[in-house]
Length: 383
Image (cartoon, rainbow, N blue to C red; front, side, top):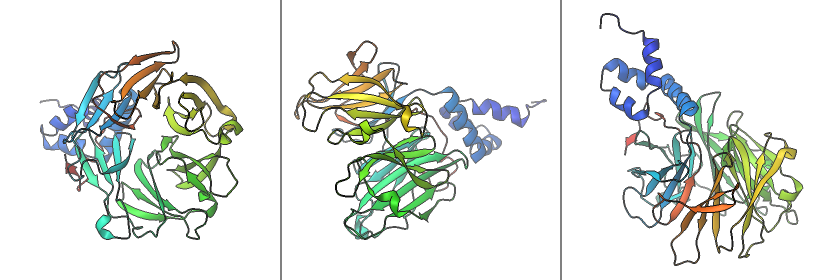
């Protein structure tokens, strides 16, 4: 061309394109390939995707399917009729995952035998970017030989200040143990693990679930005290920016609701809470949905609505789309396949959902962002 466009303008144009187009355009010329794979461009593209393509997704794992594509990425159009089959990362054995965390286009797999005194049991952590079909195995952590009994928790998030993904890995013991809690942090930018200093009072708790809720730059978990006789639950958080643990109180109604499970989530960028209103063993289940309207302010927890699961023997619910809908699973007995339904809190009606194949588990429930992250990593593996 006689009057080529300035580089800044080319960058602005390319940043607005979807991932599939950019992967093809790497073959146009060396300068485009070099530009698209730079950390600066990848960061700019992710930020643009967040501001424009902010549709909701669920990552669904089908436990009955034995193939290279046991995952579905479900895009919501109000009915979840659209889905995309995803190939399993080739360096992982299908079904060996224990928990899955997702954040800004990356998915973290932890495995059943992630750590143990016997080196033969060790299974590494894996980061996966389904948009570019690439994954990478994290280096072996520093903390490997942890005496029994132990409890392993993972956190995964993004530090907006340093523009970096971070993986938290921590071990704690029961209250009768004299062993200190251990924690370490992996930073994607440096590609290395670093041991963290942990204050003793940060881990005087049991975790009610290993699944995190990542919001406001921090991973959150529901916990309850280890000390005998104490039943006041709270929220333990790990801030990805200052890399410190803190405890956030819950209102008395939620902190003292012993015998009723609660779980954390994210809705519309706010920390959400799902409270099971029935004691363990009840047949007729109902859940109350709460939102923390002002982050960090205990008094701002506000009940949004309550869902009566209409006599289902088992139910799992997932809040999404700014409280507009709730996705629930219904299983009448152990032999019947699960049914998925949408609950509309405005009409109090349940609608069957299409697009979800077979029986399985929901592994992620955040705003999906197509990203180029891992494209610039030398040790990535193509799926």
